[in-house]
Length: 287
Image (cartoon, rainbow, N blue to C red; front, side, top):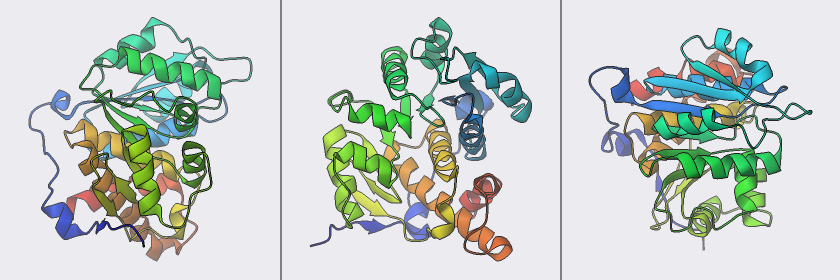
């Protein structure tokens, strides 16, 4: 029998309204995105801008040092820090005290977009968990999920605010098998196994057994960079004060509906991940 979940609708979200912090940018929190490589800096850009579009007050990007200058120009709103690279252009797993200090001061840390070395990512993930405050929210995506699959007990019992954002390939690594057709059930298995909120293709589950599903997503979201936008969007919502389940549900809806808003201009497929970014604030504001 298929698992039961609540459909994420505008009515559900209106009854679960997002926090609207007052005051300066500090009140909307600091998001730190840790990711990228010499060849994949765009993933960090997409995630970071999505976080700002979702309402984060301060953005910091930590990426491969060869890309830092160009990222700082492309995202002038962000503090950009270059991290040491391997010979292959991947971020090294021992980047030093600068990253540790940024993690310690951040309200939300998103790890994974654009990372390309699984062993180094595992080291980075442990550094982040060691340096982050107990109230720091974490978003794990892409290679960070692969690293987590090799250390399945890393989050269990930690009490941390963590959201995992796997696609089907990443879910396969986390489950150690191919996902079935019932993604509600798969999300629930993952949340129980890793003790974190899970957002799997719009199917959201929490360790206490709650579950939701988003039904507006369409084929156009299956494009390069779309997952980076989703993880950054989620990080931005956490930064402004949403709890992990709330942020995951709102992010799933805003990601999907932002894609729907692009269909009249580009058709069901053909729009780019970066074109989702400008739709996010309006989509959130008009729920």
